[in-house]
Length: 120
Image 1: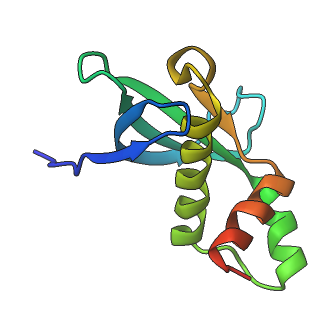
Image 2: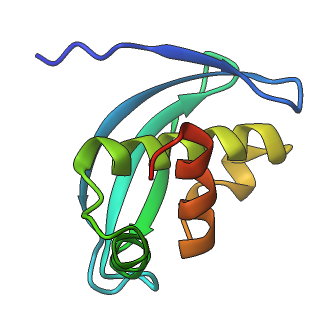
């Protein structure tokens, strides 16, 4: 049995979210952003209803970032970008369950998120 660490994030919209990382996998080939890595988080804002949020990191964004920085984007950095994208949804969306179940990290957003962490 896997024990997951429940984490808390207070979003700018006034909701307090609880979430945990479920895992990652290659995005299904039929997904609009495939090929991509899909990071899956389980989220709740009311402790009653838990729902999955998928953050997609397209291979194109990873390739463009790597070309611009002259090195590969390692796994922990990819996860950090996915988690920051989730936090941005918590801050910007008034209803993550309705409007934020499938989040995309564009090349521009990947650069912005990682720069905020000092990753070069």
